[in-house]
Picture 1 (tube, one colour):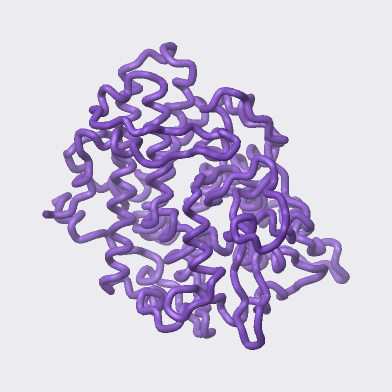
Picture 2 (cartoon, rainbow, N blue to C red; picture 1 turned 60 degrees about the vertical axis):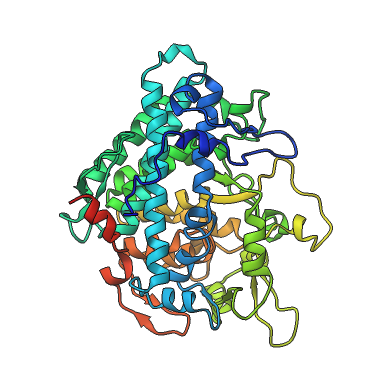
Length: 487
């Protein structure tokens, strides 16, 4: 059968999505989406419960292995950023040299394209069904529509920054299809510039629709009784929309708007940087970071994946950290970087390897005796507060370096380091220092490769060979079958 991005769209696609084992926590803070059988999507999307089930289905699809359950969170995308090694593993060996033509990599990148567009189509079905309803017919109509628009924009942005050239280097860069309909018909490719405009339009529409999150999203967290408005950090909420707008504008090269939206998130007072002692404690591992998580994906399966990948140590499966990882964290270290204790586990035997444990929940490992933090959500961090501080630092660097340094120093001090302005002699903030801190902070979260691409950085491999920046490194190939389908 010919592969196309709409091959998997069937009459019951939303019903099938909702039939997945969905979100249920020990404190009943997530909806339990139950199987709905062979219910056609036009019948499913009649009542609030159906729309909520469909949205949860979209989130469940994002946490699949070939999206953020593995490929785009801690696996392929982090090997591309040269964090990890895996001896005698052909897949990792080919990823490390950016051999996208290799069968294993081609399969992985094709699956990202196919599954992301399938999920976009499911979200479009939600939006088309909502359009047939009166906005006053459901209490959370605006939330349903806002989340769906935000998700659609987010998924297209992820595809754009994987499969296209950097628009800052090529203003005429070819783009991707921006799909707004639930249809078997192909959507033509648009230029990157047009796709950026569509992403920003959807996000701004979502921002207006999600205004009520100012009331539902509280800090400290105080979950209401109504299931759908509990744990808004696992929904594409108002602040997720604003944070992604900051990320989109930064990637596009619009520093002024990037700063506007990053500041909105910081000034909302819904989030707070962790304290250095909280960073050092194992309690942050394997969960959406308390205080800092703006948006994440709930997953009770993620633990098994990352435990086998990082905690255990086998020859052909487990990932080892690059050998100079300690030097990276100690670079310009004034004070003590508590991320070292929080993210890395010392070797248990002489000659052993450091283990990357930031993603591994010690409550499930039973590695030490402690209680899981209240309201903790196991899963995948997608957007966290420190990124907004880095965006502010970068956006203000040339026009207001003192204010830029204030934002940057806030993250340093929360991690246990002295601020640049407090050192003797004081150090000046540079773009290179921002890049270095991002590399330390976001290990295992799938963001570093994108930052490297956005900055067009040469990459230092795990064996300290410089890999020059190029489209061959930073642009994933569009699947051949997609080009055929769009012909």
